[in-house]
Image (tube, rainbow, N blue to C red; front, side, top):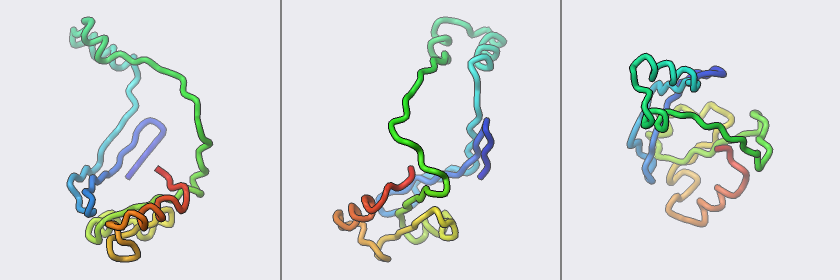
Length: 125
């Protein structure tokens, strides 16, 4: 829905194997919270014990990239689901998304057919 360099607001669906929505989250807001912010809240609330330090402590680790990320224009997402669920997602106009539904171009109960689609290219995550 919206994103900046410090926060993200998005919608998310959890679908079952049939493509039916099990959970729907609307306007989930993730925001950057630095260690200093956490420590100020703990200090002002009087909760600076060992348990809180261990629970709310932040430890950064360096990570090495194993692959080079694709350019945004090269990314394509594969979305599998039922007709009703795919209509709710409104992704048909997004050129980055390839939407496939059971019985229309693919039999999702056929492992070979699903495997063929999954391995035809490197799909974005």
